[in-house]
Amino acid sequence: MIQEGTEKIKEIIEDDVWGTIKKFLDLGYQFGDGEKSIHITVGLLLLLTLAFLLTSTVLQAIRRFFTRKMEAEDKLKFISIFKFIKYLVYVVVILFTMSAAGINITILITASAALFVGLGLALQEIFQDIIGGVFIIVDKSLRVGDIIEIDNRVGKVFEIKLRTTRAITRDDKVIIIPNHKFISDIVYNYTQNHKTTRELVRIGVAYGSDIELVTKLLLEVVGTQRSILKSPKPFVIFEDFGDSALIFTVNFYLTDSFTDPKIKSEVRYKIDAAFRKNNISIPFPQRDIHLYQQGPFQHSNVSNAENNKKT
Image (cartoon, rainbow, N blue to C red; front, side, top):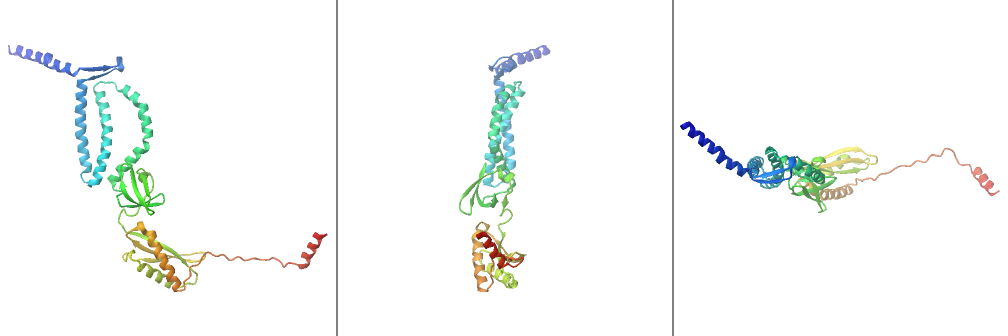
């Protein structure tokens, strides 16, 4: 009796309860005919919803893991990037879930393949810029306020966005740099490790000048310049024997390399004044031309040649 009652309860559960649930989950619409048909059911929608919730939970955990040590500004930028990645993951999850549910997704992939190829080619550089922005945020290779040199132009970074970085040049012009440039090109960062940079001014003096006096004057000039650091100490290098001058470089350190052209100009003014006061000349390129005559001109030969022309 007990066994018969158990079997009846089992039959009721399998036939009535589970059968009703199965019928409910199988409710939906069918698009197309044959093997290429797509059947959207309540069960598939519930499965997609569950997959979305699970994926969202995992992505949030990953986002918290990567942003836990980031600064507030970098965290906001990474979140905007992460939203873009999240949408791509959702598309993959939808396709994978539909395939796992027994739906033939090849028709969807085939129909959208041409669109994806065209879209991928059109957005190729944009994707490179976005990846470059991710690397900038993660490896801290660039920060707002850094002074950089790219394509022989020096600029101070004032804004880093997802796709582009903006910098202002020394002549107050804004340059917009695609972020992939920081991956593919060589970029000089003057302030990556510290704000101090070493600069130099090159000068040539005439042969025969007192080189000890030249060295002393150069150090005195940079020593009186307020924008030049006293430590590390400036120093002079006797660089070379030039074609028409002795070449010296005076090296000094600055904390603001962005305005160094103005500082170098002031140093050159003072060097010129100091050299004039101490009678040290700054030569310009010169060439000595020597004319060699193999034999003297014969006056009689010239007279005979002129007479022959007249006749």
